[in-house]
Length: 292
Image 1 (cartoon, rainbow, N blue to C red):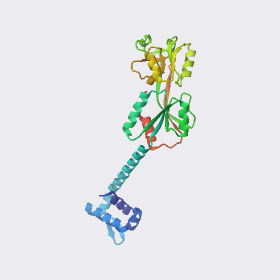
Image 2 (cartoon, rainbow, N blue to C red):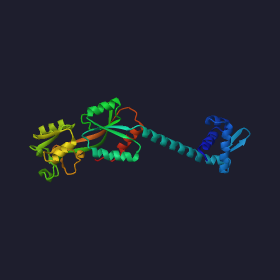
Image 3 (cartoon, rainbow, N blue to C red):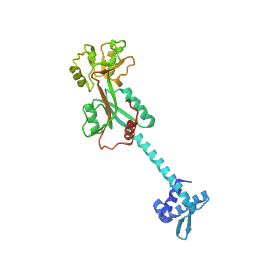
Image 4 (cartoon, one colour):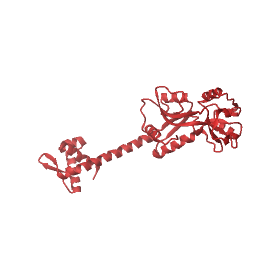
């Protein structure tokens, strides 16, 4: 049994006219008739009865017709799946990520995405929020993962992924490590490693001012790895989002009074049509088990 035979039978069943069925299938009437006859011989029963020029479905034909329709639907579905995967392989997902977002957390998601869509390439670009928004607007990025702490323009849609606390990052053996949580004022007077690239740096500075917290920056860097290396070298402590801490030997304690946190979101341009690959990426991100 061939798929083209099924297609010819279904066309003939709908038209009850072999000439019209042949026209619909873009073949000659004798070729369609022969294909239907061959299928009938293979099945050992007539699908159609012929009364002169009139064609009718036999009792067997009426009983097998639903099965033939199901077989054709499954074949079409298989073709659609194959087409979707061909499209997925052709266009990479261009993803922008805010540099201060923990790479390990995003890597866990990307690994989960790749397990379901092995043929999709993902291109990751790090940049500050304003640059990521510009690239999204201009079509140089498909999506961006950011902390929209100051909000985003109406032209963008933000889907929250997860929230994370800000923590005090301490070297091993630090006196504050004995506490489960640390009040902001407990950091006052400590040597500090300043994260220049933090999008919440001004908000954190305002919180320190409101609570009369004095921090003495002994080292400043835009690089997260350098900040953590300096803390491990005991140059000072740091304040970072909990999922951005990647050095295993460092200790972290949640900051309270006031508690500081941020929300990470996936951004896209409203109304812009996704590629098949980007659609799969967004759909997977919305169902992924992000930390709560």
